[in-house]
Image 1: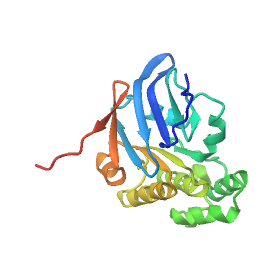
Image 2: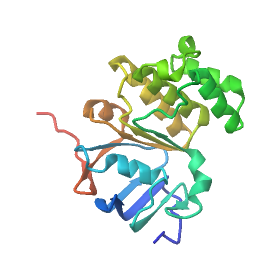
Image 3: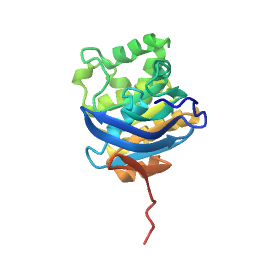
Length: 226
């Protein structure tokens, strides 16, 4: 059942959360919290539940057990629809209309969210896509689509940023772009949760690492130099 009292000290707080996917248990008795201004790196084996946890934090997947709050909204409640526009989930598949250009995608989003269209162009320039803004989304490489997703984050200014394999498709030199976008969210008092198989990149961007093991979250201790 949802917790009756919101936790205002955390952007997100989950307590004893359990989640089933297609009737199969994925998360069990999971405790997880992220504070304002914090970036948490999420690691774990394939199928461990990292992406499932991001969907819970995005308020898209209500738990079957435990309780929690995201941006003050109790999970599984009608409040989630109110806070959802303040959450950005960048998943494995780009949230782009394939037959629209990159610019048209961003400008359409700007209109939907009450922002000026010029803000879309500024976001595309910030992620290095100004020269490819008029290319159709389905003609863009994976890396370009990922940059367009990061432009979406810059445009919508979320309070909670959820990145699933954020570095996929990006060359090593673009690691700083992911970090810069996450840092802007943190500077506004928001937080980010980043999933990646690349622990080295995560350690450079996250304040701490959390590993999902057997459906539960546990801290990853910092490596001690030999």
